[in-house]
Image (cartoon, rainbow, N blue to C red):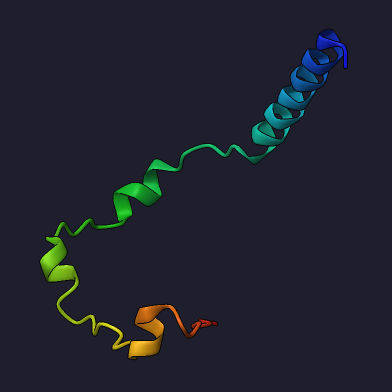
Length: 69
């Protein structure tokens, strides 16, 4: 395949991506940012109520698959 044709397709694809991205860009609403309070916490604190999944031996050994929906 001709190298110039490949480059033209790549440039064309980049233009399409840029046009789609431009349609998706919205103006940043600073009022929403000001309204939301930000709580900073440690990962230890944020994970304190998380219960780890207790996988059975077959799953841990890779002999059984798990599907999470």
